[in-house]
Image (cartoon, rainbow, N blue to C red):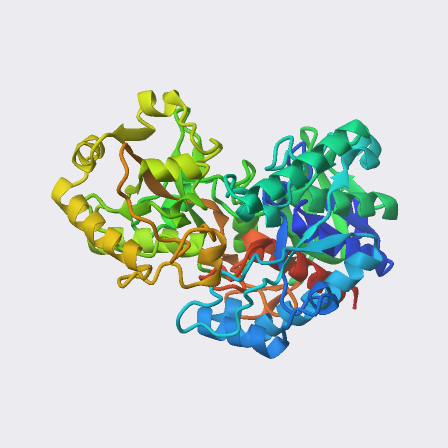
Length: 552
């Protein structure tokens, strides 16, 4: 076939964690091209905490943190269970073993990581779940000076930490601003941030640090990186993907690909039509998502048009969220785990453990809405002690912006009865629920949902609060409430792949020359989120796996 505008060995579509595949392919001596449809590099990874959940990783071994492949597989088995081919035994084993190799490889390329000590697996210590790590399997990139990227330093998508040089692994203890632990972390973060500015550095952490470090390696390796270059179609000949059509600067560019195309361009959280089509009748809205603005699903649709199979398109990385006065969704994470907080439906009933992993929290909201109604929205109710002691959204302890109240984004009342009226909650149901909840808080044991038993629940609780770091009475007026929706940080269903990251067709046969990773695929994690950075890690690992297979 003639008429090619460019040729390469390995094409990576998307610029998030999946570009690990580009780094690996170039290290194996291949000619590589990375294309990103937006004007900024980094995708959803850059907007994330940038943590990677990697069992038995080299940093754990160096610090003598116990782990094993068998423990990780037991954790998969007891938490994820049978989730279909996307989370097959072969895919799980490839993820664990290749993750170890990938970290060693990235370190050899100059990437620097740190362990997130104490950032426990999300189901460690939870009843019926085995193999979890209380100390955590998460790692993250060390702080990086964007100036080292030269002319590319302003082409990185903005991160999540604003002007602070704070690690994701520090976020939990930093929320305890009134304690010695929290103050110590705040001081460390403040000093790191100040020193960076004094030295004239442009330090980034979290997902921005990971993507900036990956971009630095790509540029050093001489890899071509094209921004504002959107995938328009794949070119298939005799059943094999041999190229791609990109839309760039108002024209189509045909790229010949000799060894493989890796799709790593995210899911469809921002595509209203796809969300509604795959929601299964559940309430859904792109107004509730905090996903990358480019998460519009065309990569999945293009692959499906060429016969690709899909799975779990009804699933997402759910994140309970409340809506700010300007309409922006705000993720609700640590607030619901702290003492003095309870979540109820419209009838005032408590229906799940508020401190569970965010994906499961969203699933519980959907399930309750489907069975009983009144869960979308649900209501997070906190008392004044909670507002005095803990941050809420981006507001520090003790400060509640008046705009939140006057706009109705947050409700405030001097009694629970009055608060119920302002929220449209059944007052009698709320009073009955809070009375029972407060008895649990006094005893330190949640008889209904076991809140505070899991290690991750304790991590986001208040370790200075006894007898249970997650349970405290909702008793001190005034009381506050926000409406919670099943927001998300991206979809987690998509193209079905095998253990080599090859995209499968509807007959279960690999599509020759086509690979995929990240949120455009059905996740190896199934319908669970196993630990901090599970999605970012899987994207990086299967990008690495794809490069190895294509290069063979």
